[in-house]
Image 1 (cartoon, protein in one colour):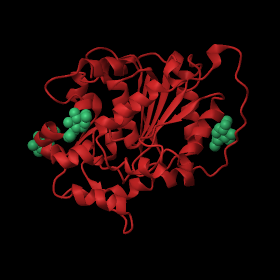
Image 2 (image 1 turned 90 degrees about the vertical axis):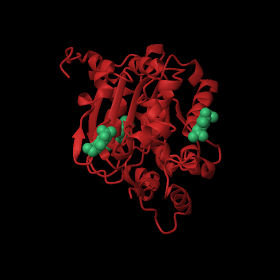
Image 3 (image 1 turned 120 degrees about the horizontal axis):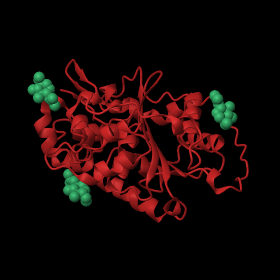
Image 4 (image 1 turned 60 degrees about the vertical axis):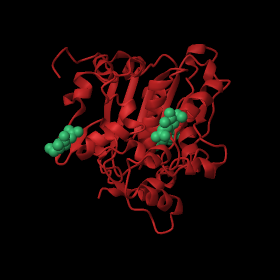
Length: 332
Ligand SMILES: *[C@@H]1O[C@H](CO)[C@@H](O)[C@H](O)[C@H]1NC(C)=O
Ligand SMILES: *[C@@H]1O[C@H](CO)[C@@H](O)[C@H](O)[C@H]1NC(C)=O
Ligand SMILES: *[C@@H]1O[C@H](CO)[C@@H](O)[C@H](O)[C@H]1NC(C)=O
């Protein structure tokens, strides 16, 4: 049975970030320029499974974002101010409620709430949760959403836990047997983006989170589409050698059913534009990118380039601003 193999490696995502950022970060903060147009938009970051908002590796990424775009306010989304509780909330909880909490926290934040827009960076499951923020709340609105190794089209397998990962084992004990139970769907985070194409009817019936934000059910929520289309950029990084996320192509919204891989642009969710990805693509805002290596092996150089290209001042000066939309009508 597929529901067994996912959690252990995702659990170590935080320490992998630390390991990957070998160079110490230069916190050379320039004072903010006088010109308001130069003030970078705030950045919100949502971490992955098994990580916590206070983790060193995550804060190194935040410091890097500030170094690349000096003056960036970085906010780390958390489900609890206590790091250990925030970590266990990556395994346990109702994702709908978690997103509602992130929405409320951001809307109540003195700086974020007054910003004209924010940028967003999601690691692994944090990526699809930030997409949930955009679709359901988007107040303040997100300009660029960048996700690394996220499970936008769900996962079809879970990994083995390490011998002493008790939080992971606890979650797995509950998952084993029935990912579609109301217990799993209301309490176990990975179950809420579990999506096995072989059990598609059950998924449509029971999925507490993914089937909703992907607008896969008969009734389509128009607001989800409207909000995705408002993005300037949705940047989807897939790790080339990702063996942690099954299937890795989920990072690009690809459908993997057995040996058959269907790219997003050949899927019904795109041709019928269930969540606005097609419209976003037409205006040049949908970016499929690859990152080298295994899940969440982030390289500082790639992060730097990404932050320079998609985050920073309201008016993006880089390549993005002058990119023409290249897709014609009806050809995909
Ligand atoms: C998750 O929380 C939402 C909001 O409280 C609730 O409507 C929904 O029924 C919950 N999901 C499950 C599977 O219990
Ligand atoms: C996956 O493939 C199986 C076997 O061909 C098929 O029955 C099922 O409907 C497919 N699922 C999806 C979501 O396309
Ligand atoms: C990333 O950017 C920071 C800030 O500009 C710089 O100090 C660092 O050397 C850069 N790292 C790489 C690998 O380019």
